[in-house]
Every structure is written in structure tokens, then in C-alpha cells.
Image (tube, rainbow, N blue to C red):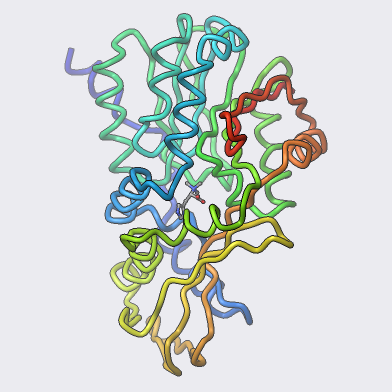
Length: 323
Ligand code: AVJ
């Protein structure tokens, strides 16, 4: 039995190295508008803070998405069908996929893909014990770059990608379309994408969702600097930086920044990075969509929206796209 257990926790490993992290941080901080990639929020502490964000009253996304999933899961699994290979991009703590795993008919395998190796190993073990008949094939990878999919033992009827949480909103429009195109290729003909898409609404609601009263989002944002300090021989002084997030209605996105409260210099190894007072590092965009905008983008990527489920207020949507 030991060999079986071991097999479940050895991921297909495309561990994105320290070198790439350093290169992307340095590249971002050298741009005229400084930036850091949002995918690096999720180290151990960052993932923990994100889980706290997901319990905040202001951050309506997780509970709204979960309510839509619960209300319509029967319709969803009906459309998805039996014996599918289910792939999740950015599986995190794998909490959201459980409702699918609980209802899908005889899924062939589940492939969680995540950057965080420790979390991936931990949740893969849990899933393997909660779903003993399910083949779990974890992949440790940065899904924004290339990696190979593992091969399940049994043949599947269809490949279905699950991409919840409106993480698609973290991509700028052209990369978002390219990513949908990539997903369409991974699914192949007859495949499908079940995706969570946050919808445009009162800008005040967007603003509040990224400026919570407990300051958890601020801590989540600033943790990125702490992570850079910890992992890259860097000396950001946290007390001289501040969380700043706002909804940009022209672009239809929430922008998160970290603003320098004074003129200062930061050192990354032997590189010196100057900051003017009030200068910002752009750390994340969260695009919000109209149903029609998203449909257009999907179509441009070769995906057809087959079904849209929303909550009563039309704040969030879960969409089933076919290739
Ligand atoms: C999980 C990427 C969808 O953009 O809303 C939460 C991350 N950032 N609060 C989002 C996040 C700030 C979240 N995504």
C-alpha cells in the first residue's frame, strides 16, 4: 500500500526556480511603471492571507461563486458528462473542486496544477484519501508557461478544464485571450471549460472588495514585498510602503498597487532600485466583465459559451464553454 500512497504525492514537477522569480521581479521593478507579477502572492503566508480574504464580507466572490455552484451543480455535471479528465488551473487548497468531485459521474482523473509545491502535495494527499477511487495527478507548474499533462490510466470521454475564482481576470485582455486559446488546445475537440467570471457592477462594490476594513487585502498585497525580501536578498522597508487599490471603470478592472510613502532606494542583491515619493508598484489587475464582453473574448479564442449561470444580483457568473 505504501507504493500506492507514494505514487499519489509525486507531482509532475516543473518547479519554477528561484532564478525565474528573481528575473521577473527585477524586470518588473526596472519598468517605468514598476510592477510585480500577481502569481507570486501565493507563498505560504500569502496563501493563508488569501484564504482569510475569502471569508471577508466585502470579498463577495468566493461565497457568490460557491452559491452558484451549489444551486446548479446538477445542471453542470449533466453538461459535463461521465468519465471526464478534470484539470484545474491554480488549484490552491482544492476546496472549490470538491463539489464537482462529489457530483461528477465516474471521473477518470483529476489534475490539480499549482505553483505552490507544498500546498499541492498536502491537498493531493487529502484528496487521495477522501476520493480513493479517483486518480489524482498533481502538476507543480507555472501554468502561464509550458508544461506537460500527465496521462491518466483510464481513457476519458472528454477533457474539462476548471478555472474558478475569476482568476482569468488577472490577465490583461490579450494574454487572457491567449490563455483561453491555450485552454481550448488542452481540451481539444469536444472538450470544455468551466470558468468563474466576475461581472461588472457598482464600482463601490468593486472598491470595497479590495479595500476591506480589516486590512487583510492590504497585508496580502504587502506580503509580496516581504516575500521578495525573504527569498531574494532584498531590503524593502515595509513601513514606507502602502496598499492602494481602486476600480478603474475605463479599463473595467480593479488595480492593486503598492505606493512608496517617501523617496527611497531598495536593494536587490547588488542592484539599486530608486523610488520617488508617491511612486507605485502595480501588483495586480482584476478585470471585470459584461457577459457579452466575455463571450466575444471566448469566441476570439475559439470557445463557444454554451451555458451561463449567475446569482440573483448578477454579480458573478460560472460559464460552460465548449471548443
Ligand atoms: C483569486 C486572483 C481572483 O483578483 O480577486 C483577492 C485575488 N486579490 N484580493 C482577485 C485577490 C486581492 C483574486 N483572484
